[in-house]
Image (cartoon, rainbow, N blue to C red):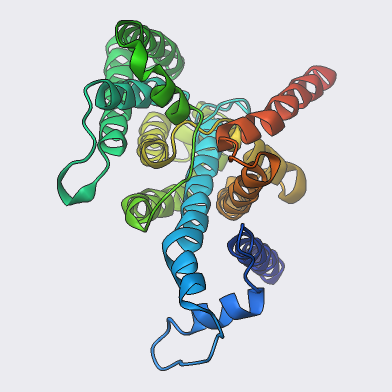
Length: 339
């Protein structure tokens, strides 16, 4: 059984690598995949092969293609893992990474940076990235604080999330009405994007994916117990409230990091976990790992699609919403049929 699971993981990883190579090769300047592989091998110590790449092609790979593909992979993994975790914590298959006001908090933060014309901070960190990250975290702090004040029922988190999201969205709308010249910039950010001129965004999100992702995957076995019920979990010596709060906080921090570098990319955290359940089963011990791999591949392909559909590049949030909305309707129809 272990070997069978390992084989499936390796097969998925191989598929992810193929998707990455395809995405790296695709663009206005087509680059052969074999040359890309040689170029990547040359990055390892002691390897020096002739890739036959021109200086222009090397610059395109190092400064545009590779950072963009890695960024898409990390954001896709983060949103998919967060979505699967939320669904397990709240025992709701329709939960998504933006459940606790992360999207509205990040949107307000980005709006503040754009309206007040703050472009960059120390160490060349984009101000929009920084402000959206802080906004997302503040939104979650508000939600958790209000929920704890109301009581220990996990449904209070959801209700507090709805209220805080509405409040922060109202502030954002007021600011945009008072500063209409900033509406287009904010709108572009909200639709999501993975444009990058280097590795800064990748380096910003990578530590969060590692620091939050590993504990979440390790806690997957407890999410399987929570599926049975809180009473059963307590009988096994597990504190459901503590586990639920821990995984929600890790998942929210991970979502905030993803949103800060990519804007609001919808439905990824909903589509991928459901697809994984259908194909690989519903055990969270494996579902979370598959969600990371499949989520990376999905968003990389969606990014390629955003470059194919419109010559001027379609916002990636439009692509994921176009796929996710029908998928969401399918999920609802399936749930009603089983009811």
